[in-house]
Length: 274
Image (cartoon, rainbow, N blue to C red; front, side):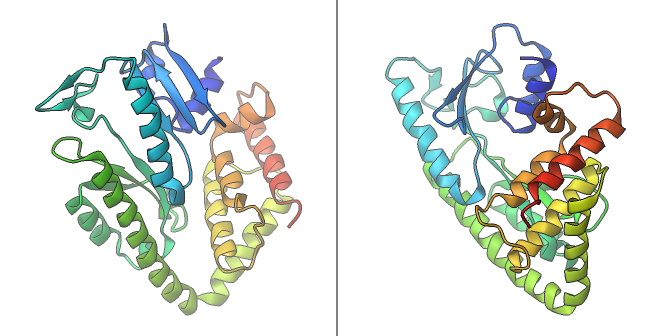
């Protein structure tokens, strides 16, 4: 694979960042439709990985567990009765499990409740951080990650994660409803402007694409914008990355102007039926 294809895998969370330092002997095996993969000879000899939607989190984990059980019948894992799995990184020792999810929380962000949420999340054995951006819509994207690998059981820990994500979603809906009712005309205007930009803009950078993705997600939530297959937000958000734009177009682009022009073209195509 060329460097751009590897960067796309990195953006998708299919390979760890440290693996790019030395690619000798590393192999990636997609399983099924590709949302599950096996990485060999990277940080650990074997790493199973699943990428999916937040609402299928438990399902993805169960799929990984089934594959793990089959592998363990023919492969001897490094395991200690006291500590659990002995992994290449001490931070994964124990369960050998790392889980993370991306969240879009404009309601909690606008109401200044993220710090309270971070403290509550930390008490349950997880952490949350903003992905990027200074704009109120950009900074509404967060990543929540598991932080415990010792002294916890995988299944119960994943059930706790599922429950936490569900609770956060319920709280976000309450704050979003409060925010939307208080500024409905302004927010509706921002959503329609975002759709107009996606339909007609000829250059869009990654930061703007992220902002537009958030507004479109809000528009779908309020039934202002149709989303027949439920993938509209993901199609737009996937084009935030310059690497993904280059990978999708199969073109080598060194200058920002060309990337932004192609990103705009791909985004126009994504919303052409709206």
